[in-house]
Amino acid sequence: MIYLDYSATTPVNKDVLDSFNKVCLNYFGNPNSLHKLGTEAKSLIDSSTKQIADCLKLEKQEIIYTSGSSEANNLAIKGIALKYQNRGKHIITTTLEHSSVIGPISYLEKIGFDIDFVPLLEDGTVDLKVLASLIRDDTILVSICSVNSEIGIVQPIEEIAKIVKKYPKCFFHTDLTQSIGKINISLKDIDLASFSGHKIFGLKGIGALIKKEKILLEPLIHGGKSTTVFRSGTPATPLIVSLAKALRLSLVDLDKKYDYVKSLNQKLKSGLKKYSNVFINSNDKCLPYVLNISILTIKPETFQHALEENDIYISTQTACSSSDTPSKAVYAVTNNKEKALSSLRISLAHITKEEEIDKFLNAFDKCYNSLMLR
Image (cartoon, rainbow, N blue to C red; front, top):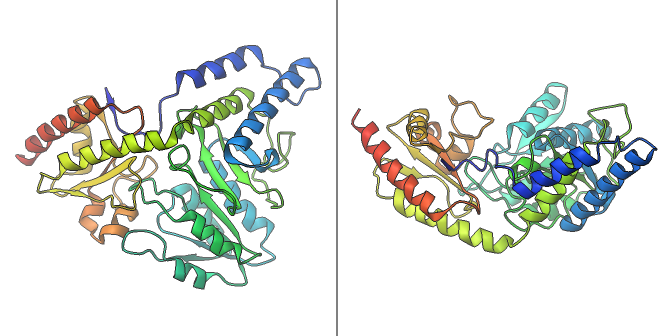
């Protein structure tokens, strides 16, 4: 099997899984309980939270555990909007956001919030001058992802954070799901940030919302003691421990991993450029972990399944997108609806082997030539 869909999810690292299993078997007490089993579990959570805080240069109380990035995004956006709506109801975002950002923002628009979508430059990055001009006295939130999941566009998050910081009534939220464990990002001026364990070789069902200490949120889930007042529910000790382990491992040799993946990306591009009907949509502003292409005369699902017959797995758009809608990210950088409707996403990881890329290119050639004859 050749797996090239790491942006959708990653296999669990064995060491992370071992930590999860160990905690499941030996520290099963409710961390809210006052007896020994409970206090042991709570101690493990406290230790894991400190590890995450140290990794990201945060305070322990700035970490809220969630079921994943989708919940974290919803908590950040709805939580800020409902808590601070007395200040204003204006929110700024982009068309490149994940559905778990667009969804809650669309909901807020239905109940009276005013939404602006900041325009993008030709390379897909945010127009910073226009962003600054859009912020008003009643703007309470700017939510812009760090890396787009479909095409890999890297936004200038630290610059955006500095712009928003000039407006004390406005908060800045970013979705770090596709960038954490891949590139270095300073969280110094970022108010809220989301990430998920299953994108960094951790387990599904655990993620976190980073919320700077003085910021308040209206919770999505009320009732029941937890690790924070902003998200109720019995703390999932094994998942929290596994998240800390996955995050620590993801940050080891970050630059070395990046350079290796970049070399794989370049090899892919070189191999695909020879096909007249293949267009590479990812540009120089994109993370090398993602390579988005379009094959204009072949339906993306058809090509995906042809590769699947060779035990090779890639995706069409993102795992959370509808297959019959154009990719907004591809359209943003190509301004071509046909390319946006026919996009395929190849996503890499530091564990991808060079020989897997060679096998992929050989299988791609076979599938391409076969399907072009139909």
